[in-house]
Image (cartoon, rainbow, N blue to C red; front, side, top):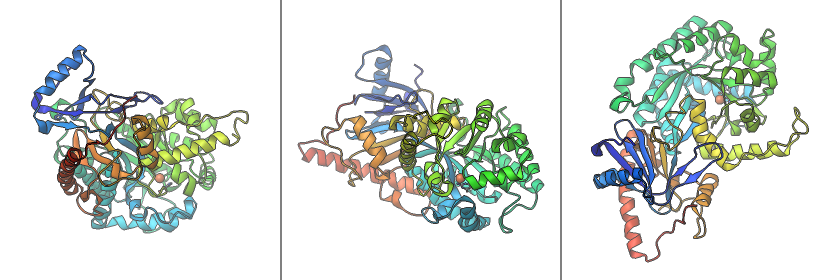
Length: 524
Ligand code: GUN
Ligand code: FE
């Protein structure tokens, strides 16, 4: 066990939840200990102080060297869990989230989406919406988010700045569109569109050292927070020369030998699929359009994928691409269900996405709920492709894994984030199932931690997420300040810290005065 020097250690003592593989969930005792290296943001060790093995003795000795400010005590009714990974969200669409959900995809784009996104030409407007969008995703517990911007490079660079200021981990991409788009929301040519995307990528890479809150590479291995992504909106919006240039851009990579992620939409809606087939008679399927442009590879992930037939699914598998399941928007603008278990069985990694604003909610808790509903429906409906097949629904534990480690894997960040495991970044949520403000559900004395977690996932909200950590830093959490609608996320975070500190004292006082403590049932 390689522990950081005491002065660079943060400790979290109490119950924590881990999801080492899909469907597997373990809960520590109330004496769990997570040690974090504050220089790298990484988890240095995880032990159970109730045990007496050598590693635990070393960790206990280390803990004794820390001052109180370095130690977060996780109280009864609280637990640590991995932060959420949102595999698909449109930051500009946060401007109209929760509205305009009455139309199918192509009409929805024309009526609501393109007019709103065209406004992001104005960087000041972009800054205002993006600050709120990022703050919202973050306080909903999304520690890593894959964001679409708009076609505007400068506004999308502003989105990157907001993400960095807020301290969130993200993939961010400038959207490319040079056909089938309104006159005020289209790029003038494939050449200009490709050059702007290339400039966006190099600007994001070049500004890392200056703009990332603690710098990159501190402590030897702090990974970058923001990774630039290549984003052809979807095949109908991009001419073949533009898609080809974007394929080349992604393959040129970030200078470290790694390709740049490609993030786009695939086979979401029946009319969209028919349109692509008509536009691209040369392609064997929709995904083949991307493949022919060099856009299909192991760092590519596609939102939706509801209508993929076997040929298309095989193509994704052969190229190591991933799927982002966006259950809410599939119900609304998409109009089809995605069979997640089939993708998993066929070896294609799956993430969950909110798809704000085709999906109305920026909360991954909602994405989890809608995914469970979809999966139950899929299991009870006839399967046209395999009429005799009965699909087993996803359990909530499997779905939670998809919302955390599964998402990190799809984004190519599986070694960096997604789980509470030594070596991963400490991207975590401190959940309180009995928060001071009352919260949105009840836990009873007989509810154990597993039940409390399940109740939180299905009936909880951000009032229960009292701290959000990214790379070991507390970047958000429930408080009066965190409910502020607008404004600077970092400032809100500072205020939130003060309120939480105070709240703990109130809680302690209440416990002193009340002989019956808040009861967190025993771990299983
Ligand atoms: N396909 C192309 N653009 C979009 C978008 O903004 N949202 C969704 N859900 N699908 C799309
Ligand atoms: Fe989308």
